[in-house]
Image (cartoon, rainbow, N blue to C red; front, top):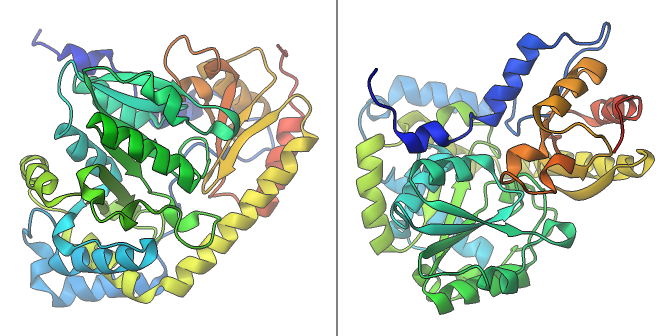
Length: 394
């Protein structure tokens, strides 16, 4: 038998794929349609005007079907730089932006330039499972940072975890899986820690378009030397429903992107051309539409927050953007809990053990609910089904 990379073999199976397998194995309750709150990906296509722009580009722009620049279309990079400079009150240049095949690739490419086998990266828990998976497959040790009230991480606690092998701290805000919106002062404290210790601060802002706060969420880009420490990641999948087109971005120093270019050229040569054209068109034309999408998500967030007090034994730990993260009262955990939710309530959700390291006592108590794809009537139905569960309690 030919060999298998032990680092890949040791990494757990993709959680969303595991949950989908439960659907083939667990019969739904009679008369109850599936309520799928397992994944934070829009299920609807982009708005019609954007689809028409994509179709027109496919017909009229021959370069849309050819290789393009490794770091992305100059027009899209310039648009991001201009809009980010205005939104964050700082200076971001076109050549400090790179386009990637989705935000997962942005993370992989950025971390590939930061850490190698034996190095360490600090991740707050509960963490985004794909971040952990990539680091483990790269031989990088994931150092868990337990979060406190509101699922917020503390820079002082992180400082105690820094060793001579630490290369970066990774934050996600608004958070996946916890929904927490990190206060500006929290991000500033982590930035100061990273700068003092010579680390990179990687901030994944995939869900920035659905932040409930008005104005800029932080002032990190207002620092004229932000690029010495900060690496920001972004995704176009959520704001414009371009999930299948795979368009993300890295905002970092010019020197860092020179190294990132090596990674991207090796794994993809260039980002999806049509997807980039769609993202550019969306940035220039869909501001009002995105504002409407944000308002709807915030209304769903409010419905989620209002529903939890009516669930006996449950506790809402975090809620924002696409996610709610809760502590459930049941004795079951992991895949057993996921299967039981399907069998009794027809609800597909991801248990907390998928977002925490083995042995974390908070993992078995957690459940992530991705509510972006169920409307307010669906949210009411979700709470009704959860209230009717008859599982054994802790």
